[in-house]
Each structure stands twice: as C-alpha cells, then as structure tokens.
Length: 288
Image (cartoon, rainbow, N blue to C red; front, side, top):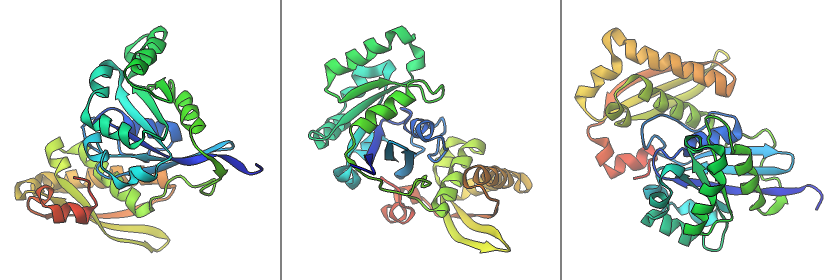
C-alpha cells in the first residue's frame, strides 16, 4: 500500500445559487471557479484539484443541476457531492433532477453538503443532517458555510473517505486540469457581472483569439461577443471606461491566481442572438 492514498474524481452538483462554486473555492483555497450573486454563473464544468498528503480529489464544479444531471462526465465520477440549501431541504431533495442524479449514482457514494448553514445555530446542524437523511440515503451529510469556512474540512474528509485507494492521479502542485487560457477566459466572464447588468453579462460570451508570450509577458487578445447591437455600447462604456474596468480587474485576478502579469486586449463584437443558437453554444463550449 506504499504510496497509495484516497484519490479520485468527485462531481459537485446542485441547483443554481446553491453555493457549489463557493464550496469548491473554499475547499481548495483558490478562486478557480467563478462566483457571483447571479444564478447560473457556471456555464461549463470547472475542475479544481485538492492535494493533501493523505488524499487527492479532483473536484468538478458543474452548471445548475437541470443541465448537469445529463452530463456525460457523471458516468466516470467516483463520487457525487450533492449541494442543497439547508433552508429548503425538502424542496431541494424532491426534484426530478435529484432523482436522476441519485439513480445515476445508485451504486456509487453520494455525500450531501447542506450549504447556508450559518442561517441556523450550530446546535441545530446535526438535526438538519438527520432530517435530510430521513428523506434520502447518503454516505454522509455535512452542513457547511463556504464563506465562513465552517464544515468545509468535515466535507473534505467525508468525500475523501468515499474515494478509492490508489496512487496519486496528478502532480502535487496541480491545481486544475484546465489551461491558463481557459482560466483567464473565465476570469473575464466573471468580471462582466461586476460592471454590467446581469442580463447583459449573461448574454456576453468570451472568445480568446490569442494567448501567447510577448517580451516575457503573457499577451491575451479576447473578444466579448454580445447578443444584441444595443448591448455593445454598454459593454464599452463612455470613452471605453467600462471596458477598461473589465481589463483592470481581470489583470489583477490573473496576477493573484496565476502569479504573473498578463497584457489583456479586449474587443467587443456582436454575435446576434447567440444564446439561442445551438451552434454558437457548442462553439463556446456552453451547456444548454
């Protein structure tokens, strides 16, 4: 058993705004998955690797459950972490999407993460877990609050215990299976929600045209593809101020996460009604 640890893949699934992305970021300590207050920010699966001496977990953040329940990746996951808001346990566990996921993982372990546990006194957390266990069968139930960090370590241990014992799957310094190019694209998209109305941010796709090394600096050229002509001016802003804010905040985020400076060149273009076009969604890699 020398060199063997609990290691594997765990998918994180739940309804929109249930706290999946915040949970993954809290578990790994890195802001890899996009987080905003708007539902459905996660549009594509995002990976984050948690490495400890005794465990290695590749966590996969997913779009809202109505989309994630049918993802092909579910078939090769070692475990499922179902995320439910503890303020609405009965409703959260009664949906058809939960039925589909529980059926898919009928012979694999399912851990339940009850988020927003800060809305209840700590003395009631065990009662919440017992309540959820009466409704469905889980390998473990963990009340958590990612923003405060409470229960996060307990959840990590619960997921770890369900994984196979094998050799490490990735180098110890691996934080994600995605490229830096993808991470920068997601950073840009997340920054849109900070400076634009939600309906415009959600209707704007990010397309990286160039990601290269120039003069010892990473150069990124990207297009912001808006769904309507009327949105283009709002994204650019008066004298380009809004666009400049997106650039500045993305550059800071990239420095924090990647540890190096990037030079970002953003352009705004129109791709009329792209969210309603299956070919455009496929091109951008989005789940519909």
